Image (cartoon, rainbow, N blue to C red; front, side):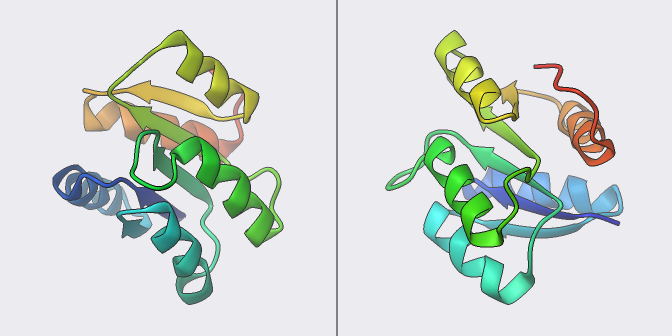
Length: 126
């Protein structure tokens, strides 16, 4: 069982994703902002993988990931970015952070597949 962080400011999507990831047998910490994610590190411990929304108020997922990695002293923390934009610039930014990218809308099974790939440490597929 892995510990998965889900950080998304959309409460409905966050709850749906958390439920699906839990049903897949993983422990989930689901929060609505970058600041909450950084605070959660102290309470819940480090995640095995982070699922981060790109566009959030105050701090984007792209800004959050390096901070999480620094705070956790885990420069290789696996991550998956999710976003409604799906621009090539966003995909490139995710790849530059050694992370996967998934454009909304997506089926939960797509996210679960990427989670399993990240947990197994497979090479990035996009």
